[in-house]
Length: 212
Image 1 (cartoon, helix red, strand yellow):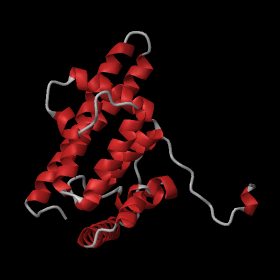
Image 2 (cartoon, one colour; image 1 turned 30 degrees about the vertical axis):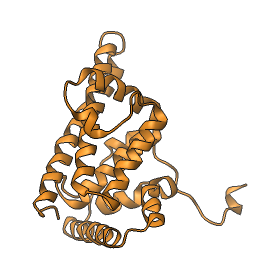
Image 3 (tube, helix red, strand yellow; image 1 turned 90 degrees about the vertical axis):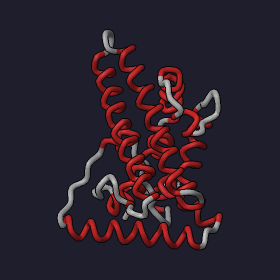
Image 4 (cartoon, one colour; image 1 turned 90 degrees about the horizontal axis):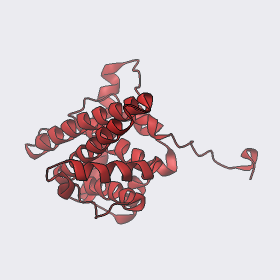
């Protein structure tokens, strides 16, 4: 089917590098107001009357619509805010969906390197292949609409810690032979570790009814 004959344009999926993308704001106050209002309205409405079809559409939102709409709403929100937490959860899901093989490799390397309960908290099966990681990322995102929101955030934080440990381990492997590739994984590890702290912090705020 040619582009001219398509009734609607489907946004192009963005690669996993979008994980590191930054967005500029023309009016920070208005962006913040819209971000908080839309995040609160969406979450409140769905959680008060959860419907499987609606939840599944939200879980599959970036597959169907791309990430830019969500980015315009939530990407500039503070990390420890409701829109900031939602943005990070969608970015993690997109990272896994765009490159599940790498996500699975990092997860398996991370779970063997990390001496913590994070693997158990995240909830991935053993072993966790690409399909299992995609399912896990969807399950975590689904939990914010139909389960304990704080637990979903904590699972995401643990997932980030395992992935960060795997990225660090892989960076060590490439450090001598492919330094540029090693730097890429080191950057990924630092970003994931930061997200882990931010999501855990958001979970704590949610439990105190202070995540807005």
